[in-house]
Length: 297
Ligand code: HEM
Image (cartoon, rainbow, N blue to C red; front, side):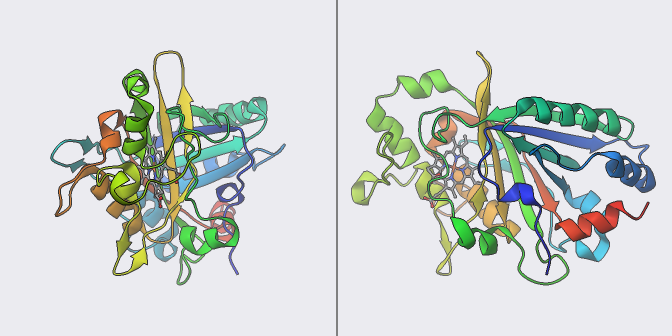
């Protein structure tokens, strides 16, 4: 029985930190494993997820890496696009004490800087009652309790207990969104803003965010488990999107539907007000696979 990394399913944190690295061309597997082994494990309630980009995952984990794991590639639809920016290593930290999280960030950066360069360095936070900065509750249709596991984790084979992961930084044009009347904002998301009720029938536009992401293929709901968190300062703000899935194609299908790379060519109206500026796929191995890798030194 494999155990998933604890950071995936703990939902009580107020503070988050995303670190994404690209390996230097001079890196060696031995040096990387030695660096990773020197990073202290989770402590003081700070949770830490480690995940590998597709190429690195195959290199480090061999046949324990999912065979079909592939890089994020640029997506171009009729109105909007998503950039190609596949990185190699993800650390996702979260907890309730930002001091502890920041101490860990400093240790990771000090340890990794010899083998990798930092490409994405972003703190994030729980905003009010789990709202996105647009004011809409984010995560409502997420699977709950035990139903999360089969949606987020690979159920069989050499990668059992691991997870396909996707991160994407989004930048909001928040002023423009918030200047819209609330009923127009609701049509963009597909839910009411305060009561958080899904729109139905003719009230639900085909280009709302919910219409583009709530999708069935051959009768099966392409559910994913989302752990996104807002970030921002006074001028730059948005969402650090993060999700886990048992199958990478579930995520890819949703991205293609948002961009409009579909027969209907409809794109997600949300993309008029928020733009993706990164995007990487990852594999998060279960704890025993990670421990074996890091103890090989
Ligand atoms: C700016 C970026 C985004 C924002 C602000 C955003 C916000 C939201 C909000 C407010 C909801 C409705 C409440 C809920 O069920 O959580 C939602 C639903 C959802 N979003 Fe996003 N989202 C973003 C990007 C994405 C991306 C990139 C994906 C897919 C890769 C995605 C997948 C989903 C899914 C699957 C649902 C639930 C649909 C349903 O079954 O009702 N979202 N999102």
